[in-house]
Image 1 (tube, rainbow, N blue to C red):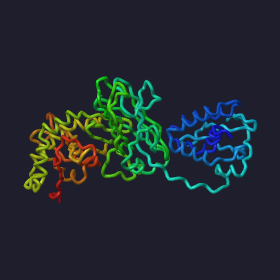
Image 2 (image 1 turned 135 degrees about the vertical axis):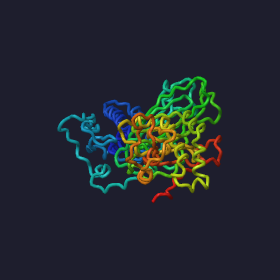
Image 3 (image 1 turned 120 degrees about the vertical axis):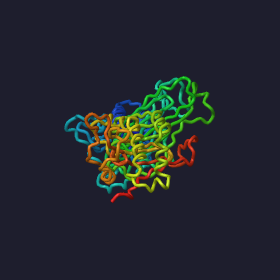
Image 4 (image 1 turned 30 degrees about the vertical axis):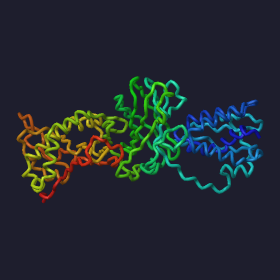
Length: 496
């Protein structure tokens, strides 16, 4: 038999396994394969061209390609394929749909049978073929799932069929596609750390992921979503990126969230040239994965966060489902560096005498900290509150790119700004124990500001905040001293 003729037959033999092997792109790949298999049944079909197109369709999906090659290597005798069984309707990665098409199969006259031909019974399969397709034989032991990674494809939008691996093109619009899947030909994979599934945990059916794409050099922040199947490759989410003519290097950060928690991050980088032939020797578009600690523990089974905040040198963003929250890093830096926040925290947390004081003896310092928290609210708190609206804002995750990066989410104060001579709320002990207080914190009639301030206004007490960091040695910035560190301690020694 012509070797090209074996390829359509082998595709039919492994059809039921292809949805899982291809992943989220299966509906599109299915449509193309069905058309090719139909053409292969036509009299005088150019089987060599059809076989080449089938291989090209499966080339991006390494697991599917390997399964096809294995089926070809098995070299089933020609007579075993004369009576092909009905392998059932192909299914998408989401499972069987309500209007699926039957897989094209060969009829007795060699022409393809239409899937809508009512009453068209498939010829009886011989025992050997029934076993090969999972008939009465014992089921094969499923192969171990391949490790999956963040995958990226880069192409010039003017030539989308030609992936870029060496450099980006100056002045061009690029299509940068992101997916999660096994390492495969044509993709740039963020390998080297823990596989994506080890961070996320088991995927029972289909998990929605939010992907944020940041490119600070062109002031770009975008977000999209993809669906991760149990095995195989997810469907791609594509970002359009226009690079300036005068840019000489492009860096972008890819953040993948599950239920708003950050699962993995990767950094895409490469030189930008006008002519790819003039790229410096050894140039490559690279994808580096971040090492995040502490490691995730089965995120797929955990309660999601209401907001996931990530702060790196690429920028600070928050993800709340499909909403992307941007923060003014310059303004935040001014509040932290130009205000009194660091001095107050240093005094409260490092001075021996200060640490021994009871809270009612440190009212002045505590009031000063409240005023700093009031300045943080419009910079950090207000963007989140306005974006989420009536949705809960109780559980937050914060990921910063190094242990010394200071993002004072816990110190945001969301009660009304108190008077300059305000006193400590009488319910402060309850506030420290429970994070809530039933006292009135509003200004009274004729007053501009309330006469008391309360610990319950700090987000560090009223909300659940989970912190993670990119471990030391990953993406460390050279302009931050190694020994810079701030410790904030809440002392409860004076509680009854």
